[in-house]
Image (tube, rainbow, N blue to C red):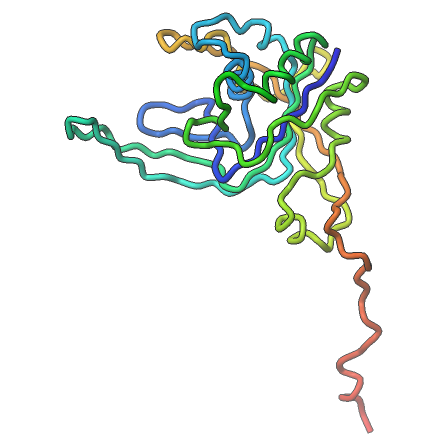
Length: 238
């Protein structure tokens, strides 16, 4: 088994799992269906093609820079001038995530090459959300999914790292696709069965949450200490 690591960073991302009608929401982190769609596109697969081999991959994501929720009041028109329904679309602005998929080594290597030279251009959940950095972070052949995510360096933007410069280590949230041994977990209808636009299908999958700490490369070199100074000393008695 091997693990492919990807970084998903861009001005905007949107990872819908329960969008309906005119309200297009986003999850707080990339979804498995979104990541599998990205990988299938990189391989050159059409929407109606079988993706069962990709669905069998185990999925995990680490939030290196959670981003800010952004709401777009969206209006569109046809070429004829006919107005389409107004919609609300939600995005994550300035977010950075590390995504990992674990599976058969041969398939992982194939995906690695596809991400480096994709057939269809990748995007971060929606076509209006291109990535701002290279996607691939390499392949780990001797580590499990959770271990590979925990040992990655912090990929947040430098300005975000400097914002936390007083913290020598940063606590990051990790969402892992649950396995049977994990017991009760949260669920999300995010296990893709078919991307065919005529009949999209998604099943429930379990999610287990954990945490890790990574060093902050932008941390100050000194440790702040309380000054040995009493500002009220001069207000004492005679």
